[in-house]
Image (cartoon, rainbow, N blue to C red; front, side, top):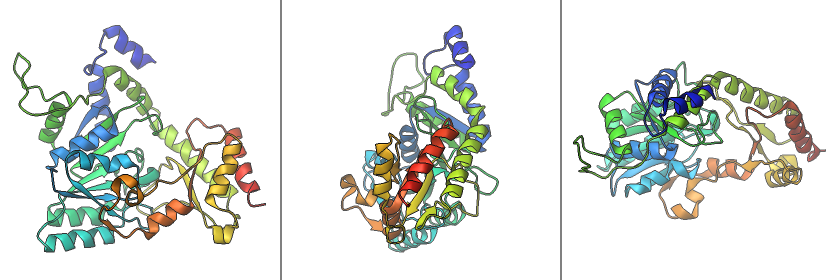
Length: 359
């Protein structure tokens, strides 16, 4: 409220102002990138990243299949084709060995992918190092979709800070929010400058309104950035709270047959943006969907994990490598309530309803 009031009192309302500048500076410092550009959504950030990476009509872009549609849709905005890669078990993220095999196969055929969109799913970093090495070897631009992983670590660093670009989201369901918004981060100052130019309708630097290329209305407002500034100060507490939810769920479900909590990969700490688990119906005697519907009857919202992109009607026929892991996770996976503000009483209610299905 202090930051928002300051913005109103100074009359900086539009997509410009001191709080917008401060939000970008603080965010870049937080994630360990040299530059940050605040935009209207994570999807907008990814669209800009792909365009600035040179993706165009006919290009192929590798993408995690187990993700939200916004990780893949911007590829199609530019006339390019997504190529979907299956997950590996340790983190539920893109399988590095499979992705590298696909890149090498395509490179030998003389057409390496233009870019790779690596998603860091549910607050858990993917295994970045082998993918980055493979991308660098074959000239593939690495773009990290860290929309769900702000506050996570890969080694000592932040996912989203390793590729040519990293993208973050401040949608209402993310670990911090500006009510809607996103951030593009990069270590390349010239690319950051171009991103700001494109995000403000690509207006040429002349006194009159002149445009030599097509741009977008993608900049974040100073008001929204003011909300983000306040949220950043509480990020560590939000991560801690979500991790405590996951720990409580894991402890409560430890003895339930067929229930497996999402693993935490050995290369970094997850934020546990959502508390996710799988239910093997052959062992549990109950399906994921039966548990979800039981929660729904108690007015508790739980959802399946993301439906893989290669199973989505909009991407029917898209080239896909693997699929068994992500399909199993979709069939058996459940996301439980895990917001930072959820009370212990509400969490215990969720636990009781889930456990009742196994009794």
